[in-house]
Length: 299
Length: 242
Image 1 (cartoon, rainbow over the protein chains, first blue to last red):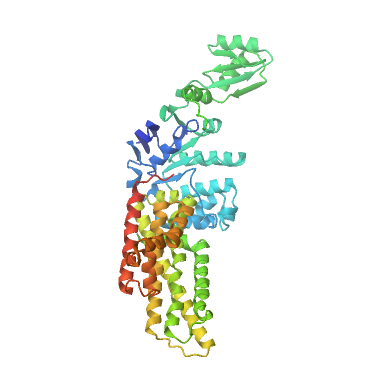
Image 2 (image 1 turned 120 degrees about the vertical axis):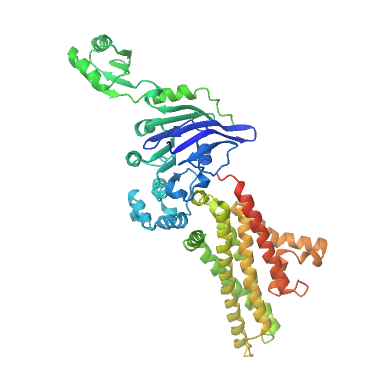
C-alpha cells in the first residue's frame, strides 16, 4: 500500500486552477521526487496533503487516512515545508522540545534528532543566529522528531552547501532504505536524479508523470575516445543506438557504461572518458512541462 | 489537551517577549501609581489609594499584547505551520492558547497589583501618613485589575487569531482603545459607551463613577472574551495556512 495517495486533488484561487486534479502515489521504501517548474503547484499540493490548505476537490491520504484524522500526526508523518519558520529568539532545542511536547513524542528524541542533523553543538543558541543551512537542518530535525514512517520535504536542499547536499542525499537514501516513504519536492533536477527512485512531475497544476526514471526514457551514456568513428561502428554492430556527442564523443542510449566498455575492449578501442551523462530526467522534464505558459509580467 | 497546554506554556517561557511585557507592566504600574500623589492628591485618602492602584488594571494593555503575540506572533514567525502540523485540530490549539494566555494575564495582573499595593503603601509611609492595608476599596480595585488583565489577555488571543498579521493586530487593538471607544462615547453618550470593553475594564478597576457596577463589568468583559474566543476558533478552522 502506498503511504501517500493523492487523487483528483484540486484547488482554485478565484477561477485560477492552481492545482488541477493532481493524482499520484508515493510508495513505501522509496524516495519519490516531486518535481515541477516554479509555480507548478507543488507547494500547494503538499500543503493540501498536510491539511494546511483545504482542497476544492479530491482527496489526499497519508498512511491510509486524511492527515487531519491521524491521532498523532508527528509520529506518522514528518514534514518540512518551505514556509516553516522559527522564532528567532528561541533556541533550536527549545523549538524541538515544544514540538515534542505537543506531538506526544518522547523528549529523548530531541537530542537524538539534533545529533542526526549535526546540530547538537548549536542547539542551545538562538535560531536568529543560525545560517540558512542550519535552519534547514533544524527543520529536518523537526520532521524526524516523531520517528515517522512518512517524510514530506519541500525543497529541503535549499540553502545547503555541496557538502550539505551530499549529506542530505545520504540521509534520504538511508531513510528510504529503512522502509520509510520519502516524498521530496525539488526544482534541482540533477540532485533529484541522483536521489530519487520514483518520480512525480507536475506542471501547471496537472500531473504529467508518475513512475520510475527508466519509464521516462532510456538512460544516456557519454563516451569519449580518440577514435570515435571506429567506436561508433563497433557499437552499432553490437546493436546500440549511437549519436554524436561533441568532437571526440558519442552518446549512447539504452545501455550502461559497463556494456560500452566491453564493446570497446572487444574492438581494441581506447576510451578517454566514460560517464553516465545524467539520465534523461532533464530532457524528459522539459518535454513534459514545455507547454507551460510564460509567467505573466507584473503590471 | 494537557500536552497542548504544556506546549503553549513552553512557547511562552522560551522567548523573552513575555518577560519583557511583564517587566513593562510592573514599571508602568509603578509610575502610574505614584502619579496621583505626585500631582498633589492626599496620600492618606483611601480614594487616592484606589486611584493609584487602578493602574494595575491599565497594565491590561500589556496583557492584551501578550495575547495577540501568542497567535499573530506564530504567523509572523511562521511557526504556526509546525503548530498545526503537530495538532491539525486547530480549535484545540486556539483553546489551549486562550487558557494559557488567560493564566498569563492573571500573572501579569497579580504582579501589577502587588506592585501597585507596594507603591501605595510606600507613598503613604514616605508622607508619614497611616496606611490601612485592609482597605476594602483598595482591594476591590486590585482584584478587578487582576481580572481585567486576564480578560484582556484572552481578548488578545481572539484579536490575534482573527487578524493574524502581528502589526495589524496590535494596531487594530490599540486604535480601538485610543480612538474607537472615545468616538463611540462622543456619538452615543456614556450610557452606551460604558458597555464597550475598555470602559468595562475601567469599571472593573473602579476608575470611573459613571461606569457599570464592578461585578457586572467583570461578567461583561468575560462575555466579550468568550465571544471573541468562539469567533476566533470557528474562523481559524477553515482558513488556509500559508
